[in-house]
Image (cartoon, rainbow, N blue to C red; front, side, top):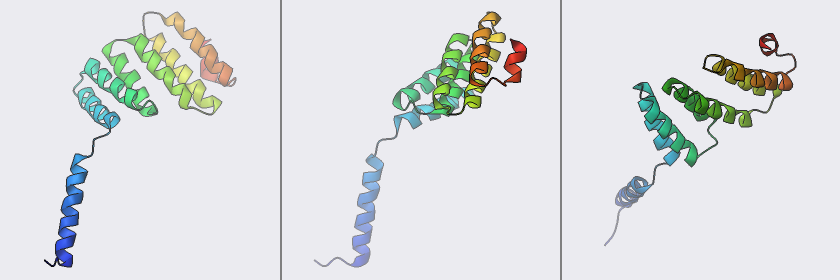
Length: 139
């Protein structure tokens, strides 16, 4: 039996399509997508769970750490929000960027029940960027 060039191509494409359909989706992407959908529906506690699963699959997602912090804050869990935002310091290489994270954490704490806890983060910001006027002003 002789197979034409066109038939061979069709068989190869069908085999590739079948193989591609069996490929597993990236769990980080799956949970990230679910988290985003839940976040849009203001289901913050469930969104935080999905973002956490995404980060367990791939902890190197700086933007998801930031989104998790916002999600926790909107869910009313300030401590978890602070912890998630502090994880983003690991992704920053320059002192000003690190200072900005600490300043943002301090700002978050100023809005909560323990505003005096913000002082340590303003101090950390100034340690990384001694010319951080915003943090110096708060201190």
